[in-house]
Image (cartoon, rainbow, N blue to C red; front, side):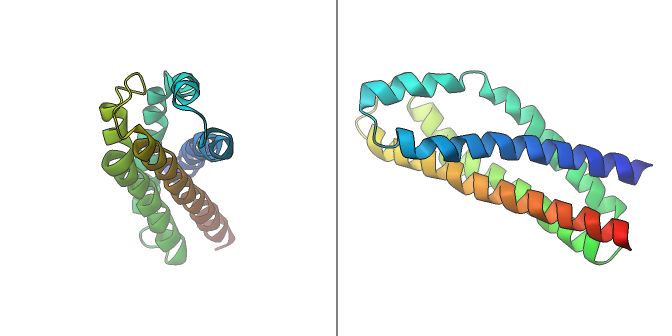
Length: 150
């Protein structure tokens, strides 16, 4: 029962995190070359997105629980562990590259002199996180399928 709950919650949270990441990637080509005033207006659509941190914490905890519950199951353990590493890596990307930009721009309400470089850092850090979230989702699905088959 605990294993099934961990699978479900992990898949749900990782999928929700992936959806948010995919939104960033899909909007990137339409935003990356906007003029400063337009870009700063568009960035305000992300107000409240910090609540997605709940989903990320849920993904980290549920996937770690899945890893621990599958530690004696061979390959499903390894792929679940790799999925957890991908999720943890999204946090490294956020705290190293995304969050400093949020602070420097006060969540895109102040335009520092280097705002264009900061925009690139912000946008591409989200794209990197999206790839990691996709990797986590694929690995988690493989882990669940392999576990169910065995």
